[in-house]
Amino acid sequence: MAALDDVRVAIIGLGYVGLPLAVAFGKKFSTVGFDIDASRVAELKAHHDHTREVTSNDLREAALLEFSSDPAALAGVDVFIVTVPTPIDEYKRPDLRPLESASRTVGRAIRRGGVVVYESTVYPGATEEICIPIVERESGLVFNQDFYAGYSPERINPGDPHHRLETIRKVTSGSTPEVAEFVDGLYASIITAGTHKASSIRVAEAAKVIENIQRDVNIALINELALIFHRLEIDTHEVLEAAGTKWNFLPFRPGLVGGHCIGVDPYYLTHKAQQIGYHPDMILAGRRINDSMGSHVARRVVKLMRRRNQDMTKSRVLILGLAFKENCPDLRNTKVIDIVRELRCYNAEVDVHDPWVNAEHAHEEYGVHMVAEPQPGRYSAVVLAVAHGEFVSMGAERIRAYGMPDAVLFDVKRALPRASVDGCL
Ligand SMILES: NC(=O)c1ccc[n+]([C@@H]2O[C@H](COP(=O)([O-])OP(=O)(O)OC[C@H]3O[C@@H](n4cnc5c(N)ncnc54)[C@H](O)[C@@H]3O)[C@@H](O)[C@H]2O)c1
Figure 1 (tube, protein in one colour):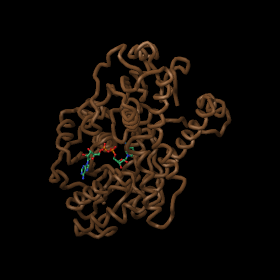
Figure 2: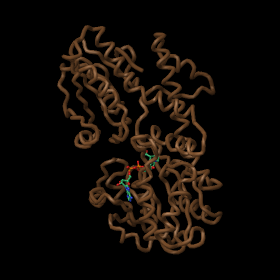
Figure 3: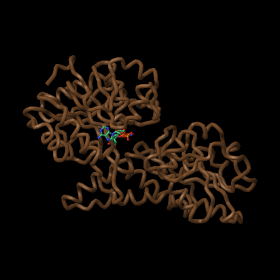
């Protein structure tokens, strides 16, 4: 292995996870940021990041970082860090194709003494069972003799200015004790919050996936309580506020669970569990509840509209926010689309407005035509679906002004005062 102070790093995949990492390493080590998407590489070379996770100043300050979509740029690299997507397919099974393809790229470039560290979220065993054999095959090198591996899951939270790469403690691991020490030292040099060295790659893989499963299941429980309390005509947030005064009551809130992580990662573990003959009842029940919340919101809005004798076939509804979460342009697996689709099933016309989202992406991904400037006084109902800072600072009165005088205002995120809206989760 190369000496830590003389190491050349490559980050494979420059998305929400890979880019901040490339910038952090590029301030200290000679670093190649590699992505198969040439347009992504071009925008980064021009010091622009459309994900808004790093600023153009950050990109300029990473003086040792260069970007490329040409695998030839990976020659001479000592440590490859893989940060490609790990989505699910239409049957909710892990889609490992980006990981396999990145492993082929690494296998063609890795030299004797090289280390490949995976950061993408997977199930326990995926690194050693799926990725390493590909690297071995492509390189002709022998694992743990000629080259080594590590796994260090990512915990960043896009759109969150407080929890940044450097300030979140990082779990590390390696395929031998020496490599674990090397990988830990490498990350410790950029992570000010410190590291936690796990005992094995499988432990580190499992730790990451359960962090997201724990959130998913907890939110599912609160969503189920919200469904019950709505029927009982009790305000869920008031109940949570009261219960939250107990020292060990956890502060989860009801809501849509979308995005590339919490709504997807549980299927990685359930897939592995089923492969070894265990049916994971609880994890899948949580997924089912969370996936139903978008249509629940839409049905609540329709009921409120009907109570005001609004004719659905003549109604136009405005949805504020399409991104899967606040202050972030990420559209992947957004559950707001479930609200849109369900409302359309009731023959409502639906307009979507989101200043964070790229309108072309929204159309390509979901067939949604975004409205750049919603017309005041036009809508029968307005749904605040994502609590972007812009919407919250508008306040209920200005949001209501998009609606007709008897319009329904529904607040999915409970971002507005309860008394100022007609319904919320
Ligand atoms: N986004 C998050 O908040 C977050 C947080 C923690 C962990 N993760 C995990 O990190 C991984 C990456 O997620 P992301 O959100 O950064 O994804 P992303 O879609 O934002 O970025 C992935 C990048 O990888 C590139 N890519 C795809 N295949 C490639 C290949 N074969 N070679 C080189 N580049 C390739 C894509 O072009 C894209 O630019 C996933 O496993 C995800 O679950 C994500």
